[in-house]
Every structure is written in structure tokens, then in C-alpha cells.
Picture 1 (cartoon, rainbow, N blue to C red):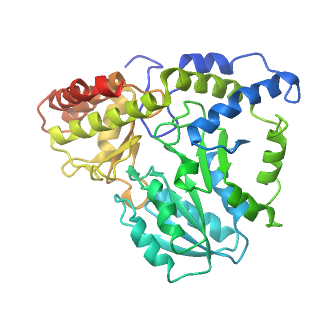
Picture 2: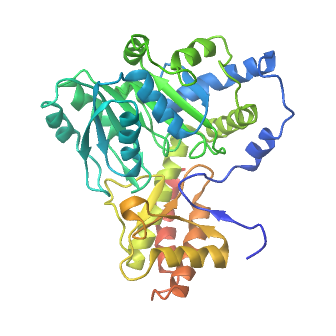
Length: 387
């Protein structure tokens, strides 16, 4: 392994394109000057397209978790009742945030590795008419599950007026997101995943229905009070000092997405998912999720006859290849491969080749090249159509 040569294939942070790195190295400007206002004016309409909304997408200097907390503190009051759908570690994080604010939480637990069923959620809500918000995770990073967010609001709205609040941190920008059409009230994401940036920015969009609730809430906090961000963004500024270098990078990342075309971006992510999954099937190594529930941005692998953590150590030492381990109840039981953002089918093929060698060095008996060949066939069959 060459010094400084690293291959980052975790579900965030993700690799940063060279043009985005160059953009972030620009000379600093005044955050209250005309140049910053022009930068925000350039960014605003393109963020709307990624979210699939007519609402302004608010930009907050903070992590994705700050977005989850902002959604809670703005849209829900202490002692309110909420439903949190837990399909993994990040659904469980919503529970912890709500409990920290004295909110009464009803938890709907789904087996880790499976997506929730919107009909079951609708039936559950009928027993709790006072629930004011439903929290869900679009892509559950810890399990590699993509939940059917596009069906959730329609099901919930049949029996409840609850707001639909979604953690889209590990997929928005890499998968189709139509917030307005799907009836999502609050959607949150972060900069370090499909947006191809370092961590440090949080993006959050809010429906008119949710704004009505937020304005009636007297306890919205201070730094995370979304009304401040909405009012200032309308004037092409921010209420607090922005992370300007990241905004330079965001402008360039959005330019890259525009040039590629969002539908092609989404097709690329779907293709990389299929290539990765088919490779592990060909190698006879189980996947945690079924095809229907599988995420386009991260794949969870559940080995049965070799140690996931030892394997991760081998590929890190041999090749500088980083894949993620399991979290909480899945710690030591799975490993997760990120394929989002600045990642292409060529990167997937390279990653799979290194993984095959790592498997052999970990003591797993495989036919060398079998997984790569399976991924190559998927690319030949579907790559041209998706591109």
C-alpha cells in the first residue's frame, strides 16, 4: 500500500471530488458581504431540485444529527406524543433526541434489516390519536435498508394529522426525493454523504403545514430555531456565521450534479447497488437485506463463516480500503460498503477486486474473480441504460 493512498468506501463521510476540494480552497470572503449573498442565491434553487420541493431548503452549519434535533425542537413541544419508527440505529437516535426534550415517545420497532410497512404504521396510529408527529428514516445507514418513505404520508394521512418528519441524511442527493409530491413535512440531510462534501453542513426543508406548527411553538431553541434561518435565507443571508468554505464546495457539488443530471445520478447509485449485491451473491456471502428493501447508497453484508471485523482489518492493512462495521446490536456481525456520492461503477469494481483478495487472506475460500465478473455482467446489462 502506498503512503497516503486510501480508499474510502464507508457510508459517510464519502470521497470529495477534486473540483470540490479546489472550490473549498478559495480565498475567504466576508460572510455578510455581497459575494456571500450571491453564493446563496446560486445555491437555493438547486437545493430545491434535489429535495423535490418548492420550499426553500435551509442551510445550517452543523452535523446531520443537528438536523434531527432541529426537527424535533421546532416541530414538537414537551409532553407531546410522537411516533418514532425504528428500523436501525438512526431511527433509535430520534427516540433519544425526543426523550431529551421531554417528549412522550411511542416506538414502533421493525426487525433490523427490514423496511417498515406503511399499512402497519397506519394501523398502529389508530390506537394513538394524539400523536402529533411521525419520525422515520429514509435510508437506515446501520442496516442498508431503504424505507418506503414515498408511501408513508399517504398511509398516515388516512388516520392522522401527524407531521411526517424524515431523516434523509444518508441518501438525499443519491436517490429520488420528491418531498412535496410525497407529502413529507420535514426532510433533513447532511453534507458528508451523497452531497460529496466534508461533514459540517445540514440541510432541512419544511412544508407550509409544518411551518404553521413551528410558528405556534414558543420553545424552538436558539441556534436551531428554523424561523431565523427561513427569514434570513429570504434575504440571502444567514442568522449565524456560515461555514463559507463548505458553501463554496456545495456550489460546485451542485454544479456537478446538475451537469450529470439528477436522474442519471440516481441511476448510477441504483446500478452500483445492483453490482455490489450481485457480486456478493455470486461469492455465496449473505446480505442483510432483501432486494426490495435494499438501499441504493449502502450495502450491508452478513458473513456466516468468517469474522467481519478481522476482514475489515485485513483490507485496511493490505489496501487502505475502509468499509464500515456494524453498529449496536449488529456490531461485529456485518460490514457495510458505501457506494454514494463521488463514486462510480469503476470504483465499485476496484473495491470488489480488493474485497475478493481480502476474503482469501482472511481464510474465506472463494473463486477469485467470481464476484467481480458478476458485477461486470450487471454493468454490461444495465449500465448503458442507466447512464
